[in-house]
Image (cartoon, rainbow, N blue to C red):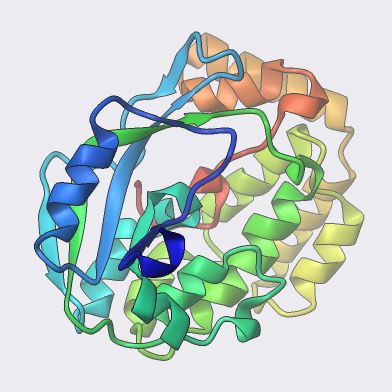
Length: 264
């Protein structure tokens, strides 16, 4: 059946399909879309508590022409880093370059944005997938993935404008320093990642100094301060608090911690 199929739904083995999800996707691909992006929610490891009800953050379905990569990029990045959101034509997947993106952790994102997409893209706002959070093996490498590998990947797309990419990744922004604080509190940012980050990022001296200070501050102190800040002032999302309050094996910060300049 796999080799006769016209579409592939890339899926993680520890996530869950919502009732009716397959039927909804089947109805969408009947329209011949080249790519379908489906929405998801996030629940805790035991699937008992909802941490984020709407990851895609969209109130309506949307069709985007495949040559409008800037619009598509702005709409689905960084959410599309979640591989279970992607339903793609099998022939398109096979035709695209994949080897160049081995090691990036996000081959599917490279497949989508390396060239214009033939045909239309459908974005489905209905939540068809539940992400079982706190089950990733790469949690200790989270800062390297989101602060190094992810920006390198999105800046490699020549068909996406610099303006669109900078809206999602501004290395010298205050929001990026906030991300460093969170990753330090989670134990995935320190001097090794700082040195890698500074080896290819062009940032101001004050930003570099702040990043260094964050890298050397005690992780336990940063964790306690972040938890107090989030709980007392109510500033943190349920995902932030879940990451910080859980044992180390469960922490796997989502791409909300990347260096953005706008709220997702």
